Amino acid sequence: MSNNKLGLWVLTALVVGNMVGSGIFMLPRSLAEVASPSGVLLAWLLTGAGVLMTALVFGNLAMRKPELNGGPQMYAMALFKKGSGASTLSGYLVAWGYWVANFAGNVAIITTFASYLSTFLPILSSEAVWFTAFGTDLRVGNVLTFLTCSVLLWGMHTLVLRGMEGAGKVNFVATTAKVLGFALFIIAALFAFQSSNLLPMDAPRFDEAGASVPLLGQINAAAVATLWAFVGVESAIVFSNRARKQSDVKKATIIGLSIALVIYMGITVLVMGTLTQDQLIASEKPLVDALSVVVGSSGSYLMAGLGLISLLGTTVGWIMLASEVPYQAAKQGIFLPVFKKENKKGAPVVALWLSNLGSQLFIFSTISNSVSKAFDFVIFVATLAYLVPYIIASIYQLKLVVSGETYLAGEQGRSRITDGIVAALAAIYSLWVIKAGTADLKTFSLGVGLLVVGIVFYPWVLRGRRLQNGTRSARL
Image (cartoon, rainbow, N blue to C red):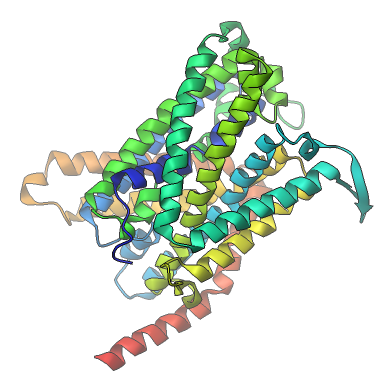
């Protein structure tokens, strides 16, 4: 394990690769559906500012508390007295929610891969009914999409099992190709950009009851989707235990966020200016459709190929992330002990298997829904779950600021005030998105349900922790 360390650029690639994944390929459509161009742009600006604050919190904590590596659950534990029941429960619940969000979020990436693969294999979009079961029509395209997603999931699972460092290098190559390809897309789309497609900037949007949604309501509706685009900004923090240098963690986080923000803003505006709003809302492959306008049908194949390479790398990165969180939490005694097991390559084998089995359950949603509907459902659930560790990290930084812990005598003034403002803004942003995303009872109930399921397994965590502590005492 000591030799399998991740350098600055591999960490940066994980941040960029995990952020710039399924979001950039599907979000232009999701956003156009719930918000006007004005609402979309304002949502991006607010989200970019909020995520920047969150990234600064993670980067600052990585420098001030380098011993708290392995994921946001470590900050949850540190909020309370070391070894206390509150510390263990807090760390466990954050790790549980973050883990569920990760393996659920993987499905959004995998289903997007299937959507873009349909450019080369149109049968994946076939509406022909294969057979009917329990009153539900199973369509050929949906069944083949399910099989495609399953093959991709377990193929990447096998790759990661061969070693985390090798999988990280694959992610680096895919991310490099992705960034270069997106730069070419931005240049090409500039020639087809028509400002008239953005008009009217305040085009009305309507809710399920047919009532007009005001601009603030549109921004709230878009807030969860835009945050999904930046989920993964904490990737370097999760892998900090595998980093060559802790200083690389903050650098990778800030560099990765900056690259992703430029890509997102550039591509979103260009897609909105290349397709009409009606075309964009109806599109299941918005970037493919946009590039086909620029260079014809050959453009759709080019963009689809770029998308597939990008999504392969993103899938690797997210599978690594999904397994790393419970693995690190189990090593700290705040997750089910079985997740600690590694194979000879240093990969968290049990965490990988159980995480991907969880993803497989969510992939079943593609059988009865279109890819776009499955994508929207998954990102909504996953994004809200990610906000809990984001808030915890912000609160922990506020605790350090108030107590003065880790601040030297020369840092007692401006540095503490700045860190406090950043942490407060990050916490306010996360609370705003949670409020916007849980406005309906169904979503709120689903979030509570996920936590309740996690609490069911908590006694086994306590039992494993007692055994671990007993073993340590016996050695002493």
